[in-house]
Image (tube, rainbow, N blue to C red; front, side):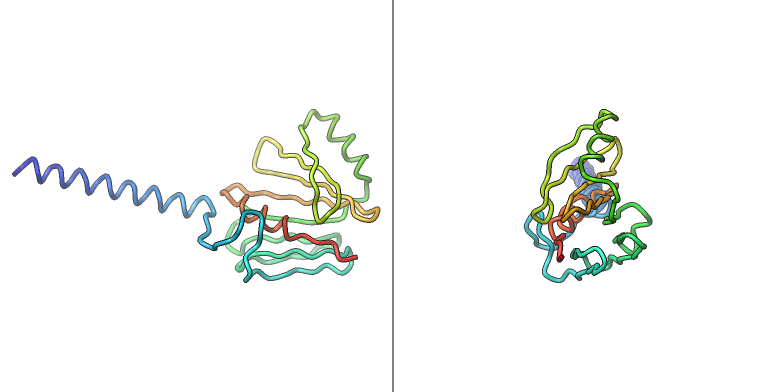
Length: 164
């Protein structure tokens, strides 16, 4: 009888530990229950349009765009700086930026954003930078996702479109 009670208590403790770990994963990883395809934003996302630089991007509910003189930063209202997505104009050419980055021994990957050529690099932390050239204008897309927010950042990036 005593062994059954002991086994029951052990199983309860294991169940609680598993439950706490799953809850922690969901909370700290930015896990979302929205059903979206990888790289595709959800249907209920809002759209930010920048007419000055001619781009638009979709972003999740509870995120907020903050405009600056040369672009926008979009981040969750409650992230405390742990996740952000920014798009801004850069006065340099894509080749000039590649030359500077290549001189610092950072590994880059060629990418395409909104149908335009670019390249991406990730530093030693959670920072990513994507440089893309559209109609003789270079844009830098900064992504910081320290709490597992890369899925949403990739979905935002996939929604970026140039409008002029």
